[in-house]
Image (tube, rainbow, N blue to C red; front, side, top):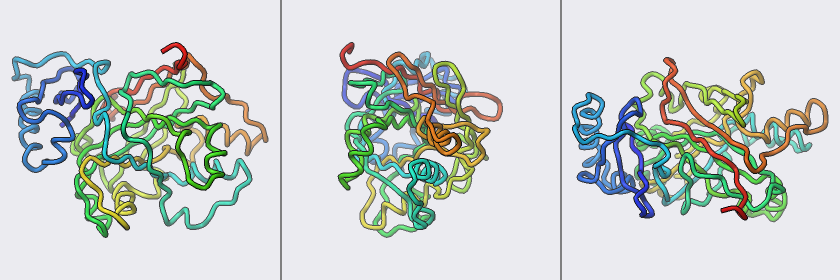
Length: 329
């Protein structure tokens, strides 16, 4: 099934069920008010939503309405936890090599992860607001999963059973703020503003055979200012699958329902598949010609992030955003 949170003036939005083709929707208020409420009581509420979803897909609901992604908040407008990994080690290796830093061998066996802000996510068509172009505004195309409760010490196979939903992410980064922050030794903060998410979150079964080995076996398409810049395969070169990323968190703590775990920037060794963030393109330029030519985003730039199935149908809907100045909001 596909779930979304519609804007209604509240902080968490109104839960709706969306049809498989993303054409129609139906309010799920009689079942649960919000997506977090569903995650808190998944075993009881999810089957009821599945019944509603099935009826919607069969066209049998009179009170259905046309689905409008512009009315969507992030599926979870705020979450108890947003933990973003770096499962595509190729991306890390390229960025480090571009600045002359050695790649620690443990990066291939122990996932990198940071805990980002989760109190103010952006919807799929919300503007990316920034105070200055000088911050180095960048997009990052990612996948993420939303979990149920996972107990401390859980193994990867156990963690896999807790994956409830998948969604797309634009993990916006302010690249020129990152070096000074990392130099302090405490990690990202101001350099990682609000992330944005796809219009809908989906249960893994919606992907069919494209969901296996705790990975999504489809490309993610990124279009910057109307030009396609990348279509990396999400399964290829993913060193740590989603179950391993969740188990990594569980090493020292419990993970609670509503935790969002990101894959990190999707990155393939095959350069012909393009890039999912500008920093990687600039890293390749530094490695090849010792000078970064590609500039970061400017006010007025647009970014579209989308995943299509093998028949060319959109699965999550598109993240489609414009960068705007804080002074003009």
